[in-house]
Image (cartoon, rainbow, N blue to C red; front, side, top):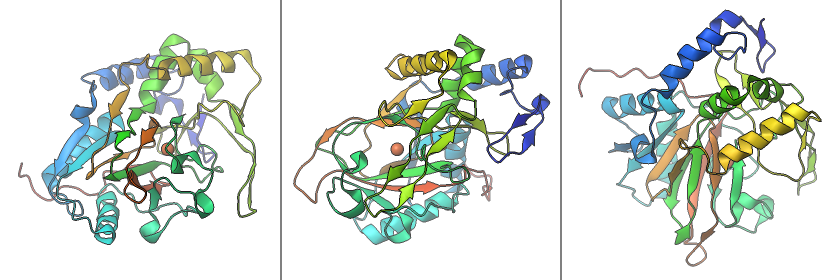
Length: 316
Ligand SMILES: [Fe+2]
């Protein structure tokens, strides 16, 4: 049975472990995936000496962790405090991973970078990401139109919160494994082209984002597994089908701290993460004075991470 990807291309089933009929390929992939999978977030961290120009050794380490878990956390200790320089470095950092097509976000400033901080102005008003409230589990851009999905994003901590503001992260491939192992019909239900609908929304500037209808799980043209999900319970409609409801219930159960491979991190200034749009949430937080509170820079990309830059030497 061929599989249809998000761009309506066809992938032959023999090539992918994500075809439910391909049981042997799935088991082989699953066993490799779970072998030595990092069990806590410290194993995802790579120290880097220069934010904009990472060394071959740092790049190799980051690529290796990304290939395993779809995410990596970097730790940069030399933040200059120069906002413009930091933003330029973040773009350069992302380019090492083939990430150069960023989205045109309504709140993006210079370098197409969104500053995530408590804000009550303009297009940020009323949106939870710009408040100190908790953010429930989701993947980014789950309401985007087909063809405008978010493949990867970079999140960089410029200032941390006084209290709270932790992130939890879960590799979508782990979620897939748990669901498929529990009941393959869950995967079938969540791969249905009408599995999840986010109704249209009228933006503050009067523009209307139409209904977003699509699957939770789908494959890219390269055969990579992608996930589109939100744990929100308002302004969402799931396909009216018993198996879909059970699959969503099981997934929410996993995300309710019943999955040992959920990673937890409170990013410190200078730390950040690059990931293939993994499932994530954020706890609520408390800040210091206005203008000095938690500040994260975010860049979202339509591509996924690629190993485009090959290390140039064998050192390290
Ligand atoms: Fe997000």
